[in-house]
Image (tube, rainbow, N blue to C red; front, top):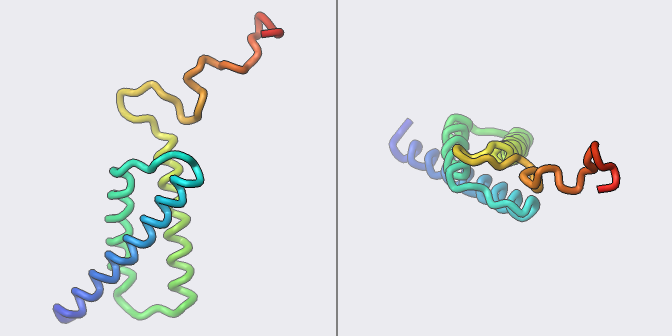
Length: 114
């Protein structure tokens, strides 16, 4: 592989990762009302760059490109969703809103009318 081909392959991988991660990250943030942490975005970006670099080793047909893009978006969605369920180190927060309220809104076994 020549230096020019290697450079074009790297640029394609970087642009693919940029588009995929920015679309998935902004879509996830808008639909879940939670921002995706920058650390997760950076990790996702470089993971997709590496995967795209290896996938760009040969020509692919339209079906393979669509399947790869769809699979990438699904993996990013899963990663961003998983990142919301993992509590930050040193925090006692739970993975879902309202969990820290001590069961507010749930009837108490000793007082069913609460």
